[in-house]
Image (cartoon, rainbow, N blue to C red; front, side):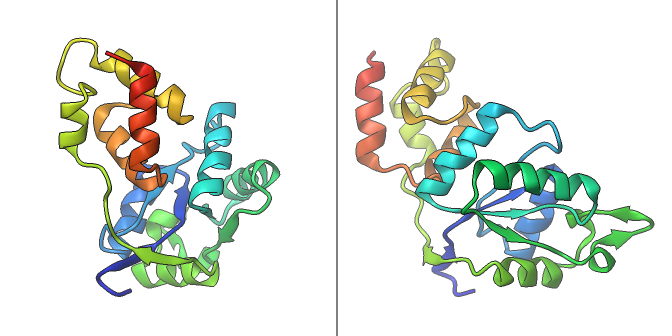
Length: 185
């Protein structure tokens, strides 16, 4: 992958270990979210629908029963999502099967087979935006984040993850400013 290009879609994996493995494979130059296993919530699935409309998603789950079940649930909600898979033999270590056990090459090949789109790398938002707009570090910032997340149709999150979501979900500066205006304060 060229230095100034990144995969446009957000990669959806099962857990934190999978996020680490996918980011490692792509030198952190990729957007990844976790489904938290079979504990998929309606809110998370709705967020995936919106995320797919904005950026697209590629679902990469473990090559086991739970992973297939998670992929099928997401497929019901987001039928036009892209799906990637790693062979069980390439994702196994000491009888443990999972994306986190796959080599960087196996992860990259799985994502490539899903035919991702490439886009120029640029982070629209910085921590400074969150500080300047009282979304972190001051009394009432949590409430402002809750309100902002509702206006932007993303699940509530802490400040650090809000920054990730703003950049990953393709939210524009205009959308951000309009939502802040509606939040007030």
